[in-house]
Amino acid sequence: MPAYQLESTIGDNIDRVISVVANWPDVEIIVINDGSLDETGPSVEKAAARHESVIAAGYPKNRGKGGALKEGFAQSSQDIIVFLDSDLDLPPEQLPGFLNEFERLGVDALVGAKRTAMTPGRYPALRRVLSLTFAAVNRILFRLPLRETQTGLKVFRRSALEDTLPALQTTRYAFDLELLVRIRKAGGSMAESPVVLTKGASSGLSISTLWEMGRDTLKIWFHSFRWK
Image (cartoon, rainbow, N blue to C red; front, side):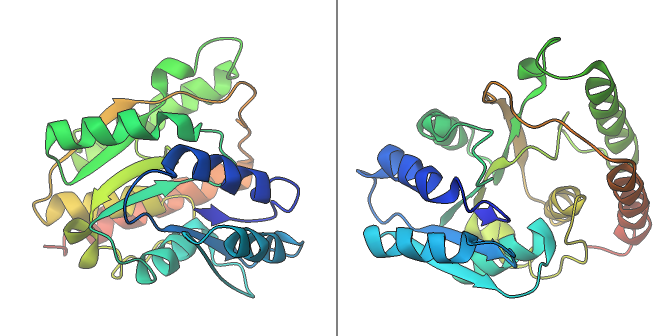
């Protein structure tokens, strides 16, 4: 769970995840404070003191979501790895069903697909158009068997991440795309499954974010010809 500037909610969010997975065996909940300037780090440490299965991780300078997830993976030990955004725009109550689908399909990576949740009235029209455009560009450039890559709920087999995740060069918004392209290039299998969004989930995108995503997508496409 990568976390940045979430001092007011991160403690309650961790408790909520714990309530979902409390009876699961060998669970590690690794929460990475991605260089937050507020009290996110101390809040995560307090949660770790309350819950034996919570591991508090982090560092002083912001590295972006990709950097946080790489740090979390380095501290993990289990064979199944879940990426879950700490703001809980994607409710953790859907984790059991999502993991059941992962096992049923037998893939190396299962990606949340929020397309059906991005209905008019919940997501702005421009945001939906941009999501569709980004997905179409990715299908053309990378031939991924996915309509979406950026959703903040994914599950992986450890073997799919061991070689691909440490090699990633992108650490911010296009991190997910590079990771999935590398897994696909390495022969990994993947699929997507619908996920539910919290009502009022964040949907804003700045011009600078769009520019960064477009730039990094082209970089990934260019470099991908050298990946095996």
